[in-house]
Length: 257
Image (cartoon, rainbow, N blue to C red):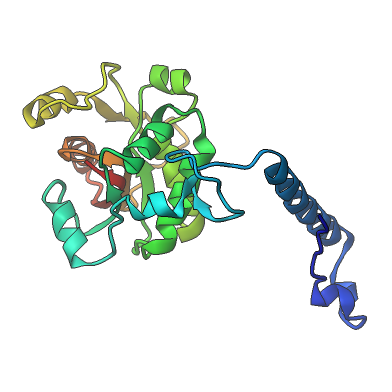
């Protein structure tokens, strides 16, 4: 197998070659080597779709899911229809929604995000979703729904925070992963009734105490979570902020249950 790399026009042009300094050249060489190693690795151990097992083409997948499985996710498009559906669970002036949580490939992806030990996969999903939805305006900050420190220690990461990082990279919006905290550590609320979730979440979230040198951040908030079920979690977190006079303008969620 022969690999060829296209030469940069800056490198081949003697009149502009001086624009490529040593650091830039090292970066170009590093990127080419990474591409070379990726192609070699895939030729030895082909990557397969995490849902159906099909072999993945180079760059022909989204977060490890083949394009066929992604088609079955039930991806939501930006627009009033999606906003109306979102507002039935959580009302906000702005929202973004990824896909419907079904019983097949989309559920397998969410399970990987939560328990798969692969935070990079969740970041990639954030980048994918941000490339499809316009960025929120108005100087907002992205606030991921926190997990208790014990659960984060157990999993190694907070999937909502990693999702927010991917969104923020593409949208160029800051992520605040430490202001909102989870106070209580309990069982997962997945599958609980609407009334049960509302009651359990009343005293679950709070704001991290500021030290003497910090000023209170009053920028508008966009909440970020991986799954929207009844909307109780988002409403509980919005209430925490609104009690302190801070506006929550909406939310971004990866999957709608």
